[in-house]
Structures are given as structure tokens and as C-alpha cells.
Length: 305
Ligand code: DGL
Image (cartoon, rainbow, N blue to C red):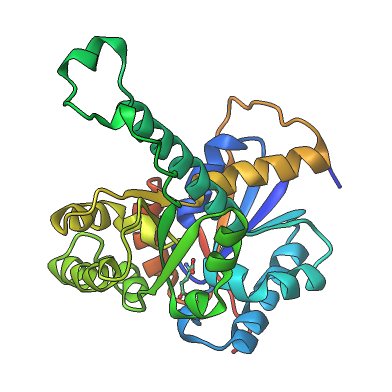
């Protein structure tokens, strides 16, 4: 493996750009090849066999193009095809679900411990405590951390998040949100229809659980993190909103370092090239918005039907 990483980043559409956005400043010495399989999106409504076939074709393309490490910046492909992808290529592969679940654990742990610290009586506030205060009662057991995972239908059906969270002693309620990816791909990230759809999904989810955190289990959803958070508040939930992009970027750095050694800091920005399997004009227009920097060059790719 050459010492400069070439990192292939793959998603069914624009969502993986939220992961690329985190990777570019974190590993600036790398060159990135992004592939959005926009012609075959959404993956989240398809069967495991189809998702695996599409994801494997994309992974093979990225390796053939020169990638020496692969980031599956798609929860659906990670949940349903990670093993198939790892079998199909001979380079390290990083998925988004493990990092996402660990990010949830980290936020929940710090959130719960700061809440328990804030209810702890100190000598200075003892005088204002009520008679028979909580400090005199036996400590109640710590609540089991509870997370609401919003994801595509296929990711929810796989229970990849529920199982991964269970290993971390987090209880996860999974909610399929099939309309969100098409709305994001339409660029409707701040639109009344998107807010109404969120209100319907979150009302239904909050009737089933009282989460301390909402985990965005689809890489498209960070693009609507703000309306998700404001809808939660409107519905009376104080849950924190977590996405896996930042944690996935750090897992990628760890994988690159394990393979190539410590990465140099770079004074020049990372370089990247983009491929899309459908309209390059749309990819350039919306992708620029989502990556928050110009995408000058998008190449059209035909990897079959
Ligand atoms: N961005 C993908 C994910 O993280 C899903 C989009 C799709 O349904 O194709 O799950």
C-alpha cells in the first residue's frame, strides 16, 4: 500500500457527502474518490440481494479506480452488505453503523453523567433542599440509556442498529422514515413538506419511547438535522441529535493510521473527485450545497442496471 491514502467514499446519493465533509479536514493528505449511485437510489426500499449487488459493484469500481481504503458512507449498504463488500474487495472497509452506535454511547454517557451531577446536592445548596430530600433516599438505579434511531426501511428491517446498540447496553427503538431520502435528494432540506413529514414520523416514534438521544441512522439525515431538532423540541422532547459522520471520519483515520502509519498534517486542502451514476448537473448543484464547497468536476459513471 502506498503511503498516501486514496480513500473511496460510497453512498447511494448525496448523503455520503456529509461523511466526506468530515473526512476532508481530518485526513487532508488523502485523495478522495466519491461515488454517488444516484441512478439506483433509494437503496433503502430495496431487498438485501439488490442492495448487496449494487454496493459490491460500486466498491469494486472504487478499488479499480485506485482506492486503497473504502468508506461505506451509507447506513443501508453497511447494514445489509458490509460482509459482501469485504469479501468482494481486498482493501480495508469502514462502515458507518459501529461508529454511529459508539457516538451515541459517548453522548449518552456524558449527557447522563452531567444530568446526575446537576441533581447532586452540594454543601452550598443543602440549605435550600426540601425536607426528605432526594439525598436521603437510596439512590435509584441509573436509567437504561435509550436511543431513537431514524433510518431507511431496509436498515430498520436488518436491526443492525438495535443489535449493535444492545452490545453497548443501549436500548434502541428503530423508526423507518422512507420519505426523508427523496425529500433530501430533492433539495427540500428546509421546506414545509419536510417539516410536516418529520412531525408525523417523530410523533409516532415518541409515542413508543422516551429517548435521551436521536441517532440519525442514514447519512442523508444530517442535512435535515436542524428541522429534526426543532420538531423534537416542538413535540416536547429534549433528546440530543447525533449523527455518525464525525465518528466515521475518526474510525477512518484510525484505519488509515493502522495501515499506513500516522498521517502528516497538510497545508494544502485534500483533493477529491466525484462520480455519479445519474445527472451530473444535479449532483454538482446539490452536492455543492451539501459538501459546502464547490464540486467542480463530476463524472458520469455507468456501472450497469
Ligand atoms: N444514505 C443512505 C443511508 O445512509 C440511504 C439512502 C437510500 O435509501 O438510498 O442509509
